[in-house]
Length: 352
Image 1 (cartoon, helix red, strand yellow):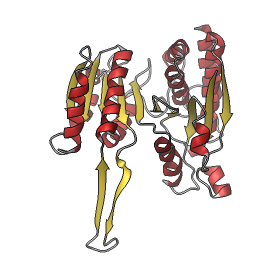
Image 2 (cartoon, helix red, strand yellow; image 1 turned 90 degrees about the horizontal axis):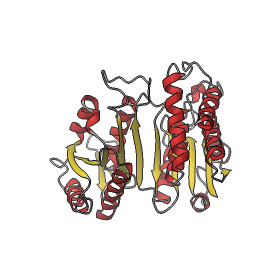
Image 3 (cartoon, rainbow, N blue to C red; image 1 turned 120 degrees about the vertical axis):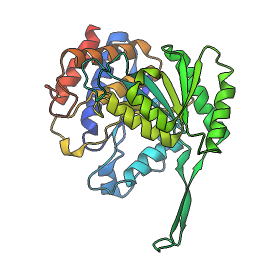
Image 4 (cartoon, rainbow, N blue to C red; image 1 turned 60 degrees about the vertical axis):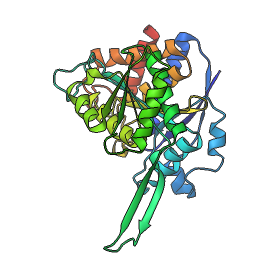
């Protein structure tokens, strides 16, 4: 019995989560696995009502679950950063979700801005370190607000943090069994301390995986090749900041935020899965938002829980929906409502 915590969140989050759960239910009926869900109301409405971003018990409560299914965080009446830092970053750090896993996969008939590239060329995964680097908040100001102001932001990287991320990436490359190639994305020519350590850890761990081909690319070159030759990549591993940047580029080349999903992974604990596109509050309760990113997040959730048959059924159902039915990934332009897309994918899962 899988225990899944559900955080619908803000804006269109509850709408896309509903469709994601609808598809998970179809997959459960089709393949026979058992699960139960519990919903948590963390988000903007709770914060505005109580003044509390996240209860002290939240992390301990969530540790009791096998996975977390998140809709979106971000409320138009709450100053940007409060909810994102207070919920998303707080949970990532508290639950030690040290991997951010971002598949960059172009589904059939989905528009990409890359000319002459299709699903065969755009199918790779970014493994981003998720709890260190520039995101730990180390640094400070000197003479703030004066002409002589100094701002220092430090990137904190540990050997343990880099190595466990790198090892996960090698294991994932082997399990994915597609190109069997892992690329380290860094900036060794400028960030001569942090990425010297990353590169040494990468090369040492690589000795344990002789079946995996290794490569290195500077982050600027990685961005360039993601656009020009995305087929060169199988799995990319990188630090927190560079991973944040290149995964947004990845989302665009796979068709936009309406289709991009991600996972915050603790391989030894509880992981959290979410659509990448945010809460899109202007579309709230209009039944026009694209739920495929949330559905794909549910697919990643099931894959991580070991329900590979169910995950494969959802992947194929999404491909059928984009390839044969949907006109666009954009909100209001899909040719179907949010609920109709969820119904369609769920039906394709049952027929699979």
